[in-house]
Length: 105
Image (cartoon, rainbow, N blue to C red; front, side, top):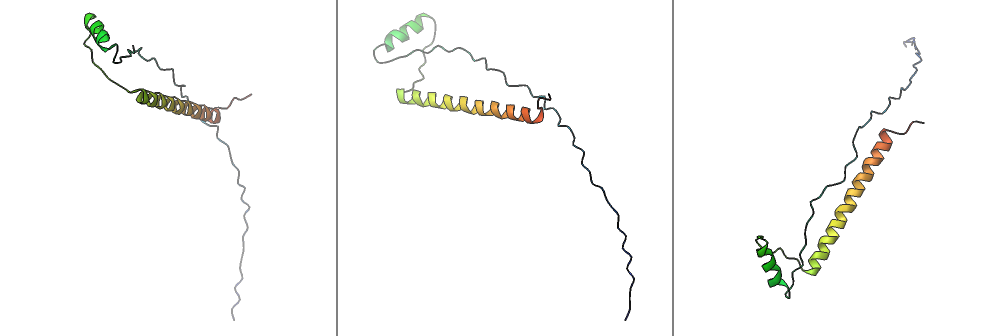
């Protein structure tokens, strides 16, 4: 039977952690949109000829893009959803900014 002497060396290792400061995002907040102003003309069966005549007198080639009242409501809903999504995105950007660039007091 063989006996092997074992030598055990213990080394104490100190583990430490250095927290790195978060890098600033430097993201500008989105600016408000500068949309072009549209002129809506409501055309119905009673005023169609009059509206077309006025447009032609003004040198405007009358072209009709039509929506029913139900489709106009859907258009309004779509724009509301776009506004909501933009607000969510702005809120998300603000939260990232708070996380990465907290106010140090």
